Structures are given as C-alpha cells and as structure tokens.
Length: 266
Image 1 (cartoon, rainbow, N blue to C red):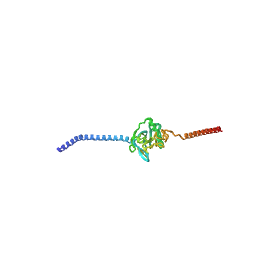
Image 2 (spheres, rainbow, N blue to C red; image 1 turned 90 degrees about the vertical axis):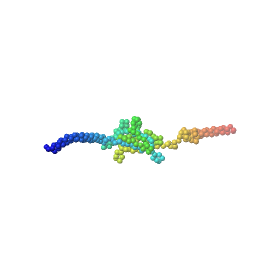
Image 3 (tube, rainbow, N blue to C red; image 1 turned 90 degrees about the horizontal axis):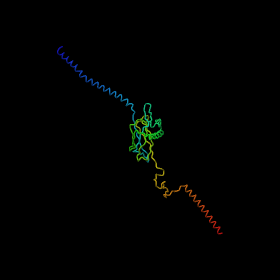
Image 4 (cartoon, helix red, strand yellow; image 1 turned 60 degrees about the vertical axis):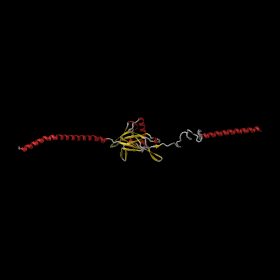
C-alpha cells in the first residue's frame, strides 16, 4: 500500500467513525416526529367519532305581536320560561321522544298531536310545570320589536309561557304553547325554530268601562236623580196596580157617602 492508498484508507475509516455520531441525532428526531404523528392520528380517531355522534343543538325564536286598531303591534318587554318536557332522539328511522318524569302523566305520541291536541296538551303540561315548580332550561325576553331568542337547546319538546308582562302589554293574554326542536318543514329537520304565539286583547265590557261613582253605575244608580234608585218594570207594574186599587176603593167610598147624604135629605 502506497502513501496515497494509506491516506485514503484512513479517511474512509475516519468517515466511518464520524457517520454514526452524525446520524444518531437525526434518527432520534425522525423517531420523535413519527411518534408525534401517531399520537395526533390517534387523537383524531378518538375525537372524530364523538363529534360525529354528538347531537346538534337548536334554538327557539319568538315573534310576539298583537293586532291593535287594525295594526300589528310588537309586544316588547315580556319574558318567557322555556321548560324541557321531553327529550328527542334522532336517527335514521326518525325522531323519538322520552318524556321527563315531572311530566310522565302527560306522556303521549308528541309527534302525532294536531293543533288542537297541542293546545290542550300545553295547558296540561303547564299545570304540571307549575305544580312541580319545574326549573326552566332557559328564559328569553322580547326586545323592542317583540322578538326574543334562546340558543343551545338540546333536541326535545319545550313548553313556553309568559312569566313577566310589561305594563304596556297588560291588556293582552296568551296561552302556554309547545315547540319542538327540531321541527319538520318541507321534509327537512329544522333546528332553529321560529314561533308566533297567539295573543288576544281583553276588550272592555259592553256599554263602556264607566268608573265606580259615575251616574248609571251600580255604585250610584238613578241617572238624573243621583242617590235615588229607579224602579224596575215589575216594580212600576205593581205600583200601578196599587194606585188603581186605591182609586177604586176611594171612588166606591165617595159614592157611598154621596148616596147616604142624598137619602138623609129626603
């Protein structure tokens, strides 16, 4: 082996000793990166099924108004309770319901109720909710436009009823009502539901709303003669009969007096 070959052989040996020292940290980095990727993949595989089976949440929006003087007037400032009555499960076969224990006596085929059935069932459920002091799932308030919303509701049947009435809306009334989340529209499940409660205004009694103490009211009868009660039709008839009897008796007595005086003068 000449001098050049010996030098090359030493360089090869040196490089052979150097490569392991350089390659070892790189291998560790590669292994760490691979382990990290595996961990991320496992995390995704664990979380993805949970996200896939998580039930979506919904919302209820109320649009509250009443007709006054031929105009649609918003009912602002009222508050409503939102009470869960039955939980809903959605699968490929449709929607099924499980009624909560507090409302077990009102359990029914919720999805099969028509408009009349929903009204009757809402009144029944409202009574149960009041008796059991059921805690609302949430509450909502109507803004200046009479609109209020509640979000993050799990699927189910909800009872809504007014708990606070603004002074300006004191002349209105509304029955409790039921809302399903989700609801069906055009063959699709709608999770963000909008409802329009039906309100009625309380009309004053016939003849006006006269105040106590005014003429013509029971507290001050008599019309043009305050403090004197005007007799009814029956009373007038009895008075006329009495007057006629008195007049007849008087006439008969007077006739007898005249007849007696005539005989005494003969």
